[in-house]
Image (cartoon, rainbow, N blue to C red; front, side, top):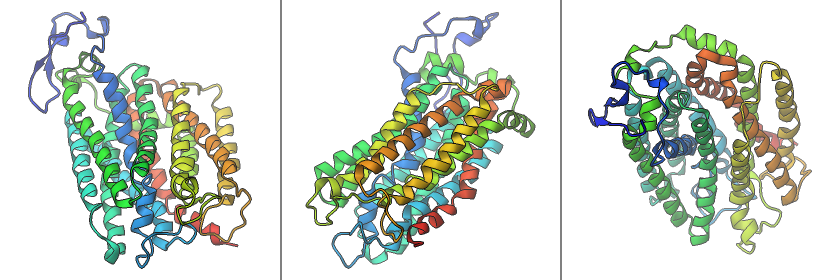
Length: 443
């Protein structure tokens, strides 16, 4: 039964004729096929990477944004004396991308079921690839004379990518909910590695050149290649026996029940404690990283290139790479640990973490500021970042994997709608991000 006779129905359709059409055979009674060419596993991983790229990849190009939004009368920027555009870019970007994600998420819940899964993947990855190419082209354009307009253009493009990513991510969650837990874990692991990929790539690019434009051109070109790989995998998923075993739309999707708003409401009601935990966790993440953390300056910063660590590598290494590495570590050990019996203990831990760890970052060496610095040393900030990132990854991973423990037969519906609800809360709370930054100058 390992060999599936799969025949192509059309280029964009999910319809494939194979094992499930054997008369009198219940597909679920058959042994699962082997993922011979690891198409399903690779797709789960790359999908996780692509879902996270719009949230992290652009902001990890910190050197590029600092250069683009610097005082245009100067050839370089001073991390201690940032302009308003430099200071507010990350926080305003969060507001824009959150709002766009909510709009896209709402449309996904209401209308996405009318589009075949494979076509959803192709449309979303294809459009993201086009926008990445556009963004890469803009790198070579001199924007010093129209910084404010470029600020707006960048936010519009990133907002569009965030909307497409929300559509793609919510579709992917519903898609992988039908697979064994291994594939959901691989997907989460890919999401964590998406950030690690971006920060590692940024370090490599910075080591290649001291020119911010050259660094950005290499960086965004590599990101475009990853998105293009996802487009290829969206085509290839049709020919994976594993994909066809766990998800096909030849007959089963047409016959299966479509989820209604009532089904979504019932599923969310069953998981409301998990939703509360994720809202608390995502709020602390939004306020802290990269909203505030990208403004932290090394104690060895000179502004003259005399310290490679302080002037060049600190932000991308001490902030982004460290955060992303422990995101991977935390996701790797995530398990469906939250049950109906221990849910209140988990909620207590999540709340204590939010109240204790998050405010401490205000007292690191983020610039510009008038607020007193309590933790001036790089190692102090980096220890806090490790604890923050690792605990965040474990809590998010445990929450997502524990959904079937609460939602039961509504798990697929919850997996589809949960990202939209989280994004909606993020959009409502995102205006707090610019205000949170202003606390640095409150003294």
